[in-house]
Image: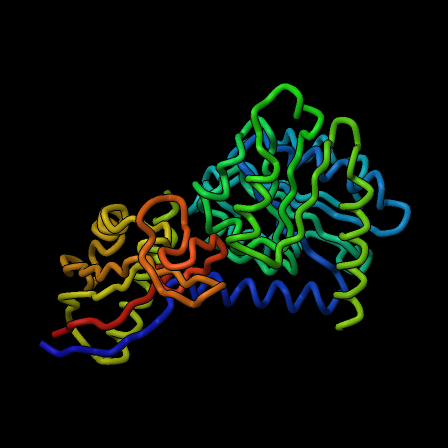
Length: 224
Length: 113
């Protein structure tokens, strides 16, 4: 019997591919955002709103991650330069996108003609926080019907977010969601996260979010 | 929930390291998993039993060292263990905290023959 020292990060395989993805995106000057939330919080709606506002200024592409179906890809098709739908049903992990899936999707995209890559992760507040994809920024959406306690229940995904969006603000009169308490929880876990309050239904607050995306894309491009 | 891919990595790392050491059998794999990492040992064990079949890792004992969560208060730097889901500092009651331990996920060592 012999003991071998190993000391090896088990997620390293995913992280190696994620780094490779980011290098590829940087080479083609593509700014990528990983959009994460529970199912139904408004990832696709946010993407549609963002595409509608920014398509005259940026060439945007979308990677859609879902367990099954092409419903979301069909919704965004007319607004995006390119769309790839990933179905995770038959992948080793169905609960989250992983770097290898993004690598294959990037191979199918005209990266030279793209400035902005919006990656819609699988609806889930747990698994996606563990897997880097090669994105430049991570965004988490919480919507009012979910309740204001999600940062307390699912801290990891909020700790790693660059921006947190509170969506469905139009429902505020109808639900018990304490905006101040939510903002306090997020700021406690992650003081650097930008917080946006918006409604994809009424478009309230979308402008401010899109300005942030533009600014981040510009800052990222300047670094290359 | 997402342990299959992670267990594939564990088997791959173990087989590669055992190959380097010219081992003929892996008897134990020592893993370090943070309480906050979101990976369940039972699940990893379940997948491992199936993924290691017909390899030199078949039958290896998976030993999990669980690292409890440890938080650090950003206001007064107190290190503490979270007692409930509300992560407030026991000293200053501050709610601005960071995780200092508990997100680990790595293979520490193996025992081979």
